[in-house]
Length: 226
Image (tube, rainbow, N blue to C red; front, top):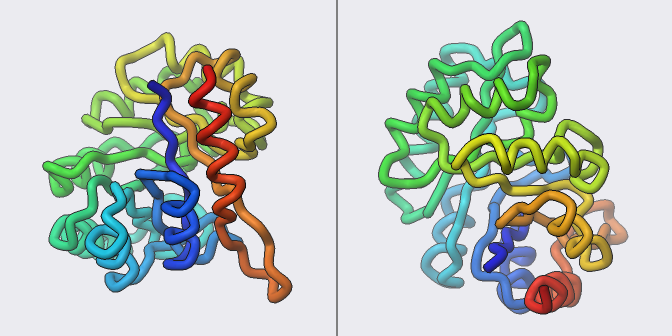
C-alpha cells in the first residue's frame, strides 16, 4: 500500500491534512524558504490533539546544509525535544562544503533520534555526487528513508533517477516536489516508490501557504485506486 505524507507548515494545515484523510504529516514552518523547525506547541498539537503520525523537519535556518557547531547543537536539542514530544520521525539533511552527504552529523543524529525514524530530506537533491553513491552513504548512516525529487525541480521530472534509487537499496524512497492528484499515479508508475510526499497547498491572499483538505482527499483517492 502506498504511504502518503502531507507537508504541513502550520496547525491549520495539519488540521486540513487530517480532514482530507491524511494519517501522516511532515510538520514544519516557513515553507516559502523550504521549511524550518516548527515550535514545540505545534508538534504537541499534531501528535496529541490530532493523533497524526508526525515527522518533524529539523532545520534551524534557511540556506545551505553545512552547519556550524552551534547550529548542530541547536539541531540536537530540537531532535531531543521531538522525541520527548512523541514525534514518529525527524527530517534532516547534511552536506559537506564540497556538496557531498556529510556522514558524521547524519550518523550522530540517527543515533540520537532512536527510536524515532530519520528521513534524509531534499538536501540530497543539491548534492554534487552520484545519486546512488549519495544514497549508499545515507543508508550506511542508518537513515530510514530519503525524500527526493530525483535531483530535478519536480519528482516527475526526476522519475528516472528516483527509479534507480528505488532499485539500489532497501532504504525507503519518498518521492516529493510537485506531487499532485493529477500526476501522482503517473509518478508511482514511473518510479515504483512506496511513499509519496505532497503539500497539497493553496497560497492565501497574504502570501502564506496552507494545506487544502480537498486536494489531500483527491490525492489519497487517486492512490487508493492503483
